[in-house]
Length: 45
Image (tube, rainbow, N blue to C red; front, side, top):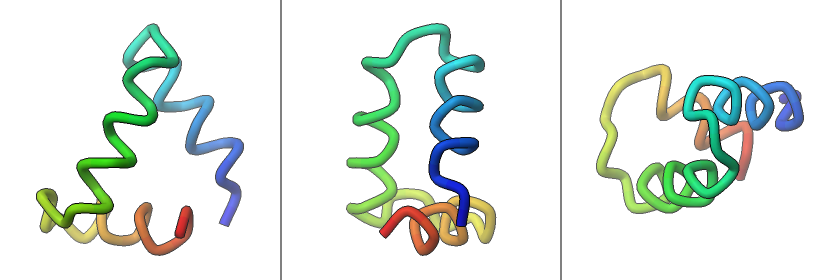
């Protein structure tokens, strides 16, 4: 539900903001089938 926290976490792990849109795009396409990624995609979308 807190997209800001999710984004900041992804930025911290990747070390760059350019990876956040990529991850979102991949999640949007449904490449990741893990429950965690599905939950993240549901909350962000």
